[in-house]
Image 1 (cartoon, rainbow, N blue to C red):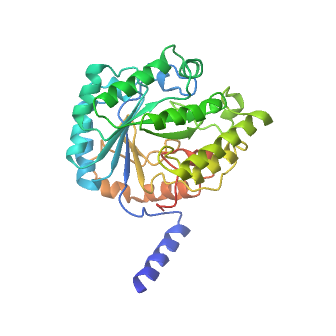
Image 2: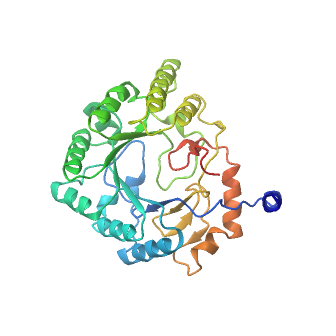
Image 3: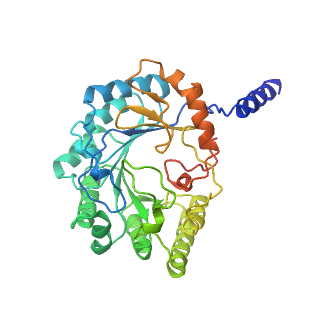
Length: 340
């Protein structure tokens, strides 16, 4: 009881100085190993980037440092398109050697029979295949390239044939909401899970813009479109409560209803960025949030524990805890209440 009171007093003191400690070591590591992509998605600008990739040796050392510090935890390799790195499977093996639960996201275009076997041999725990709808018309349009829908379906077949666990990652927007029920049923028939992310500002080398949605062709703006989105999210909430296919919590799905009506307002949910999650960007710097300043770097010899608990990091974590941006609904940030 005395220890708890002292702990609460310390947290209150830190709070008055706009500082916040993490509840513990990060339980999820986001490794942005590439900042390039070849697919001109209309809801993402990363394909416009031209930055060079950091070498394998850098990421090997980063994984080793993370392994010594916070393994076991989840480690998700993201981009860009991670499969553009020919060393991705080697990086996954290294992370698995430290006990990390590994995953990566892919747009599916580079999943060939040979690559599917290589992915399986890496021991990856889960592969997220992007599929934003359930028709060629819808998917090919949003992804900016004809054939994207068929590539995703083929990639699922190739990976599952190799015994790889696959899940579908889907960006929910006004032009695919009418296909959600068919998509979810197919996912269930294929023995997979699906996780939805609400449409958000295009990622890439861009500044945060609270008015991004006003010019987006995919954001529901009319009363009719918002009603369809609300009905879609209610249906998904019911599916989530049944369990088994939809990975989003009913709480998150219901919060999306407010978001799609009032995208510039605080949805009233907290963000776990920097509390249970840590991100390493393609330049090797440490971020708690991609729209806030960096807090550290893997180019520095300063131990990760010191960088995680540094006053700069605690200040950024405090800022995150007070943030009113709607991006708290993104799956990498959404706080289900399990983490502080």
